Structure formats: structure tokens, C-alpha cells
Amino acid sequence: MTRAIALHQVSKAYGRAPRAVDNLSLSIAPGEFVVLLGPSGCGKSTVLRMIAGLEEVTEGELLLDGEPANHMPPSERGMAMVFQNFALYPSMTNRANIGFPLKLENPRQDHSERVESTARMLGIESVLDRYPAQLSGGERQRVAMGRAISRRPSAFLMDEPLSNLDAKLRNHLRAEIAQLTAELGVTTVYVTHDQAEAMSLGHRVAVMRGGVLQQVSAPREVYALPENVFVAAFIGTPRINLLRAVVHAPLDGRMSIDLGRQRLPLPEPLSAEHQLLRIQQGRDLIVGLRSEAVRIAPPSHARPGEVALSGVVEHVEYQGHEALVHLNTGSQPAVVPELESARPQQAARRRRRAGGGGTGVGVLERLRERATGHVGGPVVSLDEPVSGRQDPHSPDRPGLMAGDLVVRTGPDMRLRRGGQVPLLVDLEHLYVFDQQGRRICPLPRDVPGLDV
Ligand SMILES: Nc1ncnc2c1ncn2[C@@H]1O[C@H](COP(=O)(O)OP(=O)(O)OP(=O)(O)O)[C@@H](O)[C@H]1O
Ligand SMILES: [Mg+2]
Image 1 (cartoon, protein in one colour):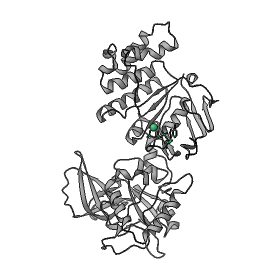
Image 2 (cartoon, rainbow, N blue to C red):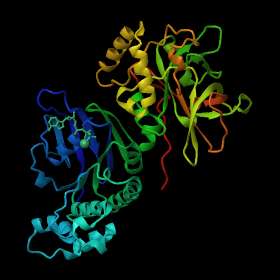
Image 3 (cartoon, rainbow, N blue to C red):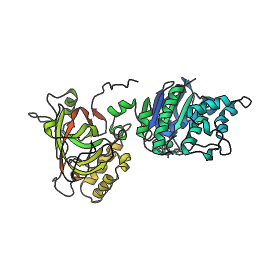
Image 4 (cartoon, rainbow, N blue to C red):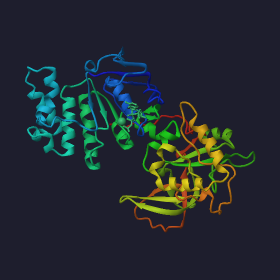
């Protein structure tokens, strides 16, 4: 039997600290694989532990198969949990470890057949008579999974089960987990902070930030239609380029998006989506460009819907099958504070700039407060106001910050550091977010599904 799990406006408070989980509602269908994704400390494990019954629900309701379950003892929930630090009993063979929950449940019965079939499923038959200390990390984690599934639980709760393993093994086991849970058809809630893992495993991905659920959607949808800047920035590698922008909509001319030193002219007639931008005229906005929305090519190669931009090459990251080109287009990157550590170079530069003082700092603080004080959708804080730009050639000019745009190219493209390259931006793939980080463009639409 597999379970439906529902959380209805669930919160968790530890003492006086800000709520670890705040007003979270989420319904998980029987057999569904849902991934909880978010940065460290956002409340993922807390949600999982409340579902398991290891943590009390402070407010709201947990329903299992539609029945209130806030106070149901963990042992009655029939769920199996797999943790990052898989604790196997060192003095028991792997066979005994896998069979242990079965033995607890029914001490007199012979469970060897179930243990063998579980081991076969996980490809660890040959190590059953060894001890955990005699296994590799990957094998140990498989034994831990075996112990969790041997009982055929009604739901799997997995808390970063692969994060102790090296990248190659992690990818391998990831595929195995997907296959195994699909075969068993058991409801699975899987916690990770690795977006690639979330996207490849989940039927749906639930993105959390600071205890608040941001979006729950199929992987394709979280990628294509992120509700806000935080989700857009958390999902996708390389990270979406986020640039501060202002819509320029003259009465007698073509509408464009001002990115600082350059403008993106919007094609006419304006699409319904781009029409929406007219009312945003003059407001601080954030433009999002994923690396696939921009290519290095001259204006003469523009396809319908592509407009020209240019950038100066800052540096090139060679990746083997492709290269990531960091360009300076003279725009000001928008900042999602929790995610900044992933871009240390920029963060360091920003700190240096902030340390330099100047008139921008008070406004910076105000903007930050405004953005983070917004209930339910605090998403982005902007470093400095877009208005009041300075001379583009001034050394203090934020627009001169290196690498505001990352673009992918083939590995063989020859690029010179400091050289200017022509770019084409595909406006079909243009994201626009408001000051609070909420998506304005593109409008909701059907995202094609995956036929398997
Ligand atoms: N027992 C506890 N007592 C007090 N605070 C706690 C307790 N457990 C968790 N917290 C706090 O609750 C918040 C959410 O913690 P949680 O463990 O759910 O985060 P997480 O998303 O799983 O993070 P990570 O990715 O680092 O595991 C954190 O701020 C954490 O410090
Ligand atoms: Mg955790």
C-alpha cells in the first residue's frame, strides 16, 4: 500500500526563532515522487521529519491517506527513512542489516527470501555476508536503502541520501533510485539542495526558501516558468543571468528594455507579453536570460525574434564539450542574496564597491529591506538603484563589473580576452521579473511534457 501525503498550512517553530517551516501546503499523490529542494537551512529536513513523525507539527494539519495524522506515532505511519549518514549496525552482516526491520516486525519468520530479492534489486547480492566496514561508500548506501525498502514501506522519505558519495557514484545511484521507486510505485519524498538531482528525479519539484514554499511544479515547468527570481536562479546551470533593467516605452517610438549601457529593442508588432511591459515603464525590473537565450553571432545572422547586443570577453571557462564565456555587457547584475556564494568573484567585487561608500548605500539598504520584507515572496534585493547611472567609463561604475552575462559556446570558438563579441538574444526566452522578484514575462502557458 502506498500513501497519499498532504500538508495543510503546516508550520514548525523551534522556540522563538523564526519559523523553520511557514504555512506550507503540499499534496502528494500515492506513488508520486516529490523532491523538496532549497538552500541549506530552508526547512527541507524539518518537513520530512514532520511527515515521518519525528518532529511535531506546530500549526496546521498533516493528512495521511486523507486521515489526520499530526499525532500518529511514527511506527504506525509505515514509512521508511534514508538519511545522508546511513547508520548501519557495524557488528551485523549486511544481510542482517537489511533483514533487521523485518525481524523487528516479525521475529519468528524466515525473511531470507525478502532479503535476497531486495539485494538483487539493488545489485548487492555478492556483499551480503560481509560487514558494513568492508564495503565502499556506494555499497553501504545501497545496503542502507535495502534496509529501508525490505519492509516494503508505504512511503520513502529520503534526506540527501547521496550527498556523501562522489559525483560519479551519485549519478549512478540517482538513476537507480528513480528506477527502484518507479518499480515499487511507492510515494517518495526526497530532500536535496542539488537542483540537478531534483530535476532528474522528481515528478514534481517543491522549491523552498526560508521555510516558505516558493513553487511546486513538474521539473520542466520550474525551469521554463519559474514563479520568481529565486526559483529561476536556483534552477539551471549555468545560473540564469539576472540583469537590472528599465522598460523604455516612448509614445512615438519602439519599446525597448534598457540594460544600462545597451538596449534590447522589442520586436513590433508587440506580442501580448511584451505589451504587458508597457505599464512597467520606468520601474526597476530584473531581466533573466538563460545561457541558451543568448548566442555569439553577428546581427546579420539574427533569426526572427532575435535582437543584437554586444559584450566584452572577461574570461572563458573551458568545460570539454562546451565553453562558458563570461561577458561584460555593461549592465548591473541583480542579486539573490542566499545564492551569491556560488559567484564569489562577483560577491567580492560587490563588497569592495559597497565598502567604497558613496550615496548608493542608503538606497541599497532601503531596497533590500523592501524586498526582504515582502511577505510570502521575498525574493531579491537589488544592490543599487537602476536610476542615476554614472558615466560608463568611470572606474566606480557598477556597469563595469566583470562578467554580467554567461553564454555557452562550442569548445572550439576562439575568443580573445578583452575582445568585443556580437551577441544575439532570443526574446522568446526573455524573463522579466518585477521589483519583488515575481515573474511578469513569460505568461503562464503549457510546457510540453515528456513522452516516455
Ligand atoms: N531541533 C532544532 N532546534 C532548533 N532549530 C532547529 C532544529 N532543527 C532545525 N532547526 C532550524 O530550522 C531551520 C530549518 O532546518 P532544516 O534542518 O529543516 O534545514 P534544511 O533545509 O534541511 O537544511 P540543510 O540543507 O542544511 O540540511 C534551520 O534554521 C535550523 O537551524
Ligand atoms: Mg537537511
